[in-house]
Image 1 (cartoon, rainbow over the protein chains, first blue to last red):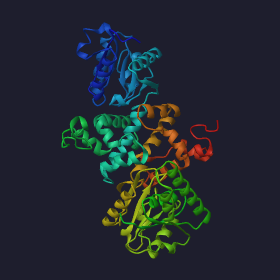
Image 2 (image 1 turned 180 degrees about the vertical axis):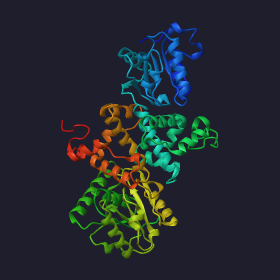
Image 3 (image 1 turned 135 degrees about the vertical axis):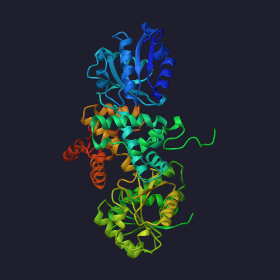
Image 4 (image 1 turned 120 degrees about the vertical axis):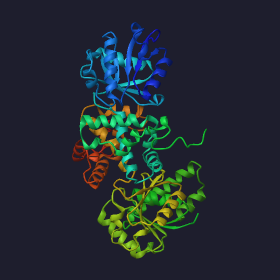
Length: 249
Length: 285
């Protein structure tokens, strides 16, 4: 699909927003913030909504996009902390709402997952697949559940590492080393969480616990407290590790 | 580095691998097994690994011979009396392990480090009631021991701090990457890795995605080298299920570790992965 003169809206407060905007611009689209949407609504081919932490803001943004954009424009929303089906239920045109999920850094993601809501039209799913492929990513369509596949599994691994750290069975460094050298993980779970943002991981964990309501998905108290203390990882200088005291290089 | 005499109890896959790691590290090794055929097989394995090293130019023929000369095959536990370090690597049966440690405590000097390679039992339980428990610790290698860099050094309730540091140094001198962990179910790796298998199974059971899709997503989106189902097929579904059950039981049925019925049914059916030609994937084709 040609990207010339096509605008894509990227809305929401998440580390995904900045990276998606960059990626979209690199591929030749015009990346627009919500503030410019009304002026250029004719050129908008698709909207991405990426709030995960503040679900009230997510609902408000989705409703705003739903009112603003012509009913045939797909609205693609992160289904990391909530199902796409629930997000779609908030809008007047649920058939154009489709879920997706990925985590920063996007350069490391060869594939994006797409999760159609129960309400999503087949044509919209096809458009969303084509759009992500135009960004140079492979796609896989999965059924709609909080956290999709990769973000959900990784969140549970990070949550377990956070429990282990809270219980002080080992240091953060040793937990990360063990997972890299004992099972070939690309990153240790705690350093990985710091790079993604602890708020994003917490949003997924909380969403799974809320929707599936099992002890299995209980968030590690340490993870929740770190988020409340704004220790969100590399982005804020501190998370499971402290980055602000690192030697400047 | 100080050259030690290391006893390895049990010459199966793990025991043979651990013995080889110690021999390569310059230590004298006494490999104990009551079964002569198992000892022969272990020796054959070491010979072939070291021959490959010679072929690849990693070591000379002379070094190969020297390394093999450091091995003594023994069949009587009493022959381990002069060992500085003993590593137990027998099958995962608690009665067997407790019996071996009761013997080792009697036979070996009070300064000897007595280590278990268990992946599923509590070090504290193995050491329970024995004299000088400060010298009993876990030293958990990963399969294949000569290849995998990690070892977990596990401190039991009564393990000594000095002894823990000595084991850590010993592991490092073997060229391994040691981590320290207290005696808790699954230690680090077998605990923190549980969701990689268990949550993938849950996602499969809830029909969020199928086996091939989940594996593909974890590799391409997550950057993992192998998908959770390919990995279970390689490990053996029975082995993976047993590890999950053990962690679940030892955490007193904590919901985070609840085993999967999908795995249970596969174990019941004898569909155990690559070793039976069929697991999540079909290997007979």
